[in-house]
Image 1 (cartoon, rainbow, N blue to C red):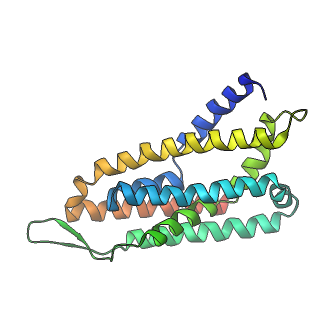
Image 2: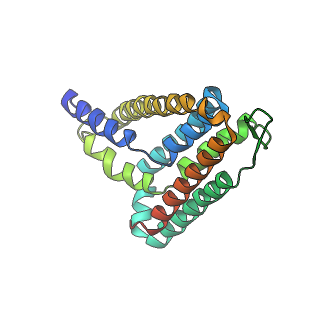
Image 3: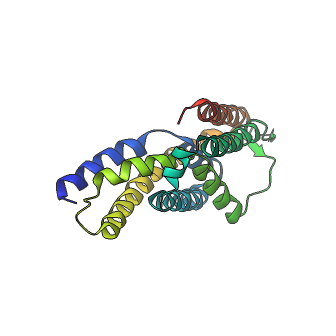
Length: 209
């Protein structure tokens, strides 16, 4: 893999990672509601799933999904159902109002493991990541050079860029936390994010391979 090829990978990954999606929305939402520390735990969950999916794809599962569309459809619909569940959960999240008009979210603070698991499941809910890795990564690997070292470089590069964008979205969410102190704003935020998650679920369910 030449330096020119690597820079091309950096540019394309930068654009793809910047695109808003379920992962970025989740990181921003968790940061807005629970703070940056919880958002970092969410990032760890998302990255664990993404890196695992890329490694699995490199091992050949992406080709299996292309060969057996029924398996892909099953995974896709399962992922869409989970995103829809998150959307409904966010929409229905109870919020009361204190005497001063401040929002009081009527749910217990989630434990780090629950936050990590949610990030993992959201990232793992899209089987298109497997197909993306199977079709995208090989284009940047020189078949004449050792493949493992090239794959490691690409994974590390992807991780740095992806996590950097996670922090951009997390800081954006953190900046919203001041406005979410009012119950009316918190309710609107819950409904907007819930609606977007359901929209992502609908898009995933209808998307073709």
